[in-house]
Image 1 (tube, rainbow, N blue to C red):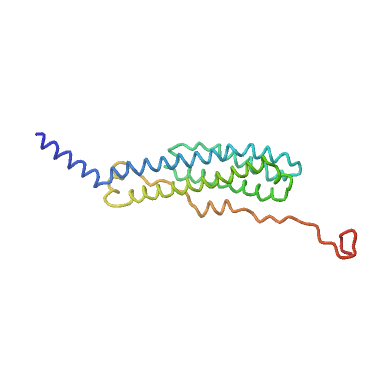
Image 2 (image 1 turned 90 degrees about the vertical axis):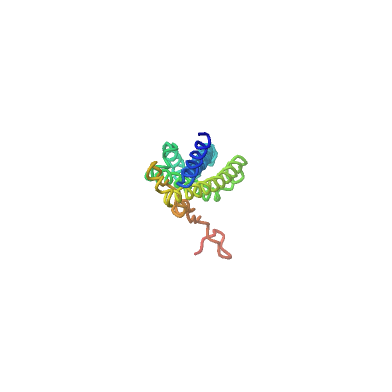
Length: 210
């Protein structure tokens, strides 16, 4: 009886392995861990925004429209409840990605515009926040790439035979993933052209050509 039990257990174990059940468990856990890290880094960025905005407000002539867009983008991004279940809802995931991409773009615009304000660039608090923000953006990229790879591995298991049969029986479905190209397009910094005074012609004191 004991030998029979061992044999049955071995057959069941091999069967689960062959059908991809164990792979689903490991890849699903990896996706969850990668997603949690993505959310952690996005939250870290959101936490930096209020201090950054308050620091920039100290520059009285700074473009208010740029600040407003950053505040609005942060509000929209943080209003989405990023639960673990969100990655199983393609529509909700796309909304989340778009909101985060818009915040990335708004912050990028703010940093581009800040280049035209020497006093702001010399502000130590601003420089520190800028460095933290840039570091966080790098960590977001790393975390997002790990998530992309984790989801790709999981989704391949969902689609491959014979594990796709297990997926159908147990209800495993493909998970949403980042569309890197679209997010890069959203986050692309704008071309900012600052108007500079024209060079004064020789012999002209006012600096305006006559």
